[in-house]
Length: 330
Image (tube, rainbow, N blue to C red; front, side):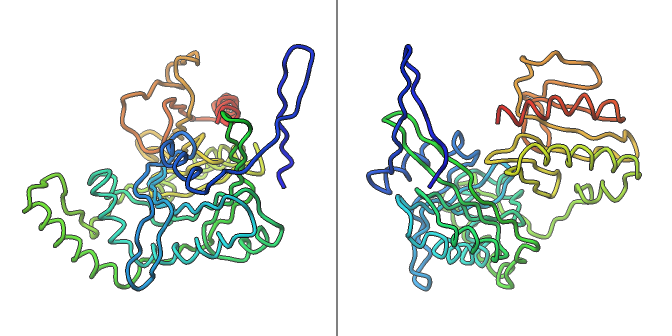
């Protein structure tokens, strides 16, 4: 049972608000799906997604998170329901049907989103009223990205989402051997769709590679440059036990439920620096030329409207204040 307690302060009186479960599982699911960006930092793709005749299942919610990682969300209104095993069954299905998922992303969010899917971060999110210690121990033994969230309603207008357990896979499952064949099927389906009048879908090439990835830049960086990067990431992780670090293709995401920082090794040769993007309102910060910048309406990898540029140890100390603020407000 959650140890979080919520109190109402009215005048000189204090009263505890009693937590409750959803009357129906579908009520919780509908609320999350309708406000997925606000609750979870994700883009909604599909509800009750049919996994086909072989698997004979329906995934509660499919989504793409703010880092482009595929997400399966399974809900249970109470506890002692087998939400974890059910979700793992669907997670294996997703990893084996990447081409089908890519086509779904293309149809719902467009070709750009489909081109930048981060398969290494594919994960299962379980949202239930509670978990027992066996659930939390079990997920630690499974080499999959799994997040357990607890929900609670307080009155008619308050919903609590609490991240209670996170398991990160050491090595994410590779693309299925059928994916290349499935990609050919995608191209055929897209061409068929275009022929029927929907020209918005375009074929995504799975063979194109980039040579300016985050890993490439880290390998090019000097020892001093990498030391600044590691200091920033280590500080962000120290802010709380629930903080997660996700190594992605073009940046490192630092998050709890949603990102509060995106860290990128920047131009190791031309302009050695670390770029940090924080989920802070630039209007609330006294911008300093050469150190902080308003990135609203400007393209960049990662999430966040405030850019922080770190070039030396002094910049790291100043950046820590802003990173902590972004964490507190996340």
